[in-house]
Image 1 (tube, rainbow, N blue to C red):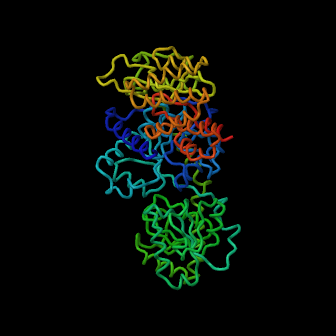
Image 2 (cartoon, rainbow, N blue to C red):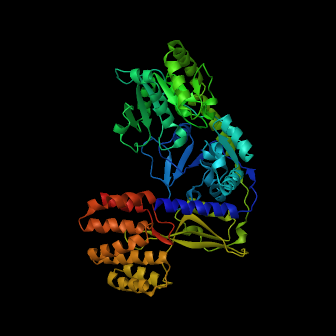
Image 3 (tube, one colour):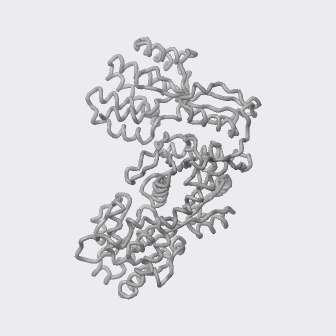
Length: 585
């Protein structure tokens, strides 16, 4: 289900960007009070255990300490692995991330594929934060359509920030984009040579990375270790990985220890205790583990990837091997381990290098860059007079949502704007519907639609048999409402999505009538037809709980929490995660 939702979103993104013909929008200077608390929103595809994600979270926490207001928006649940202090918004999985951006002073897009949807909101200037990926380091593997998509996305960014001169040069050479370079920072309070080390009898080599990601070169490091009988005899191999290995460690007996997703403090201890940290990465923009190892007083052998070259001084603070060459990596490891004076020199020079990249050195640059970037506003492309507006300010759930709606009117290139009308007719089960809020007075030929996840209050006025049935159920007549929905389902005039919605209400009626076994039978038949409709997953878990089978609902609840509200359907329960949480209490 998640893969289908991802594919659908990616296809929609590519079509939206392909169809957009408007030039890059201009910005205009804005006045801000010196006392104004700058609000920055980081828009994130991923919040899992990745070096690039950690950098964004570090920025967020440290900017908050400086008085900024920071919001993170993602489709994924809150990242429990990091002590994130920022406000956090989880959007339904099927929505563009741009649809949930609150009013703010600056938007930071952390991956290229959502730059345009951030720009579309018209809320604030958009900085693209480039940390590097296949589009920079393996552009030859991209399809032409994907390359054009990336180029167009990058062109829409108001500014581009990147983490190394290497990435800056690639952006310029491949995509003709200018960028500002501010290096990543290191947490010198955690990564330093002072502190505890693992209590081990044998010395060890340390490596890090997810072996499922080919460019991390994990298999190259393993092979390099195995090539030297002397290294194997005298040194253990310890591996840090962000995820559980996809194999049994017993099948790779040369790996002495595996640490899955250790804390930052545990990683620092492992760095400090290691004889050498070895990196086999094929490419990086700015190799964070290598510089963290240096900061911890650990000698380093690495491949000659672009990210390491940002700060590497070969033979001084590091030894470099050829990329994808385990033989070269093994030779450099052997040479370093056999030369204690070189190791001592590396430690000293590595500490000097790492000091240049402490957060104390880097954060002031980031602060100034974001403050400067937030000093403008997007110039509107529409006036409010160009729209027939079908909703009033008092109808919005709060002032913030009304403000977001106005921004959409001023900046949308579409002919019709839909938002989410909120209905609270059924106790504890508020639901939303996508409804038209504004129509352009002089639309184009295709009447294109812009959906914005903006919430407004509404009340059912029976305009259809479906609305009538909801009103009947709200009045406490589930039997009559059940008959109305059964009739709607049997007419076969509704779309598949609408059939799923009717069935949801039919099941609610059965629950009210205490016909839980009947409800479960219908759910078992319906779920395969609507595998992405989380309203039905919630009802499935609810019915199992009512039948005393709540322990069987765990997998369903987990999936539904991950996907979030079914906002890709015309009608859906709001805050389904809270409904699911209540079931587990």
